[in-house]
Image 1 (tube, rainbow, N blue to C red):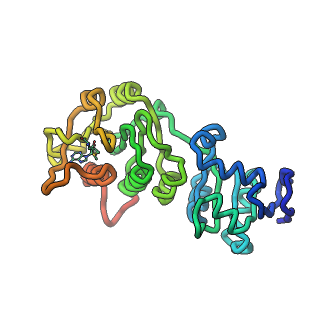
Image 2 (image 1 turned 120 degrees about the vertical axis):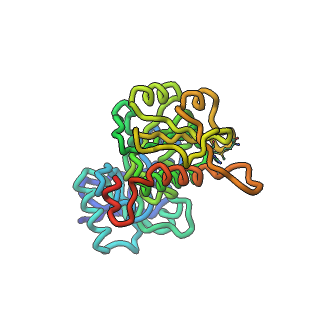
Image 3 (image 1 turned 135 degrees about the vertical axis):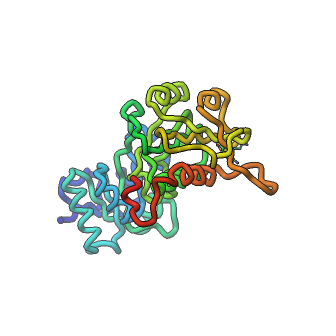
Length: 289
Ligand code: SAM
């Protein structure tokens, strides 16, 4: 690979561009990806860490830009992802630690960052099979909760996460961090409440909604007969009546002690592992998929 010094021109295809200045327009553009508006306008987002970048490329996510620290230069895996980026028409930047810190807003940044094209799976494309479990989240607000849920859903072998209504962005840096890479493995869809209920009605899946006023103990439900959509409520308000009434049943996780409710991500984890208990085995994890 050849190198080009820091300047304001776009780099030639097939080169690695060295950048040390925070005022470089390409760096300014990448830093702007911390704003949802800019992520949506460009249809791109950032993921930090070599492992995540390798995983994303293996799962065929399109990379636009690879950024790595000078100190990572020459490392075999970094060279490999750089070559892949260039081969797919992307840009490779070798930057100072100061630039990486500014891009990731961290004092001790990861050595490698990738800018990828974001992607939602259209709800209309989903035809749930009997052994499949989906998680639907009503207006989830907290990036840490969303990231943890995507990670947990991936680990439990769920088939996808559906974002209902106005939610936090699955492609924000905080959410992507919290998914630990599962955002690349698990399809994410989004829909307004009415469109979600229409899709669920036609899909043959059963919505099991969770609600603090639920009358059914979540352990008494048979999750084996149909595809299941676990519907979880907003952190502050819980499920609105429109969604609660659209669900087949309202399940409750029993509680003792003084806590009003479980944290959303914890409640989702509990439900996922119960709903998929019959499909998850310690010996053959791949068979649960
Ligand atoms: N103040 C909210 C309310 O009144 O519903 C609490 C919402 S709770 C933090 C977020 C979501 O987690 C709930 O809407 C529900 O989906 C789920 N959840 C939490 N604890 C639960 C429990 N014990 N049983 C059923 N669902 C629960």
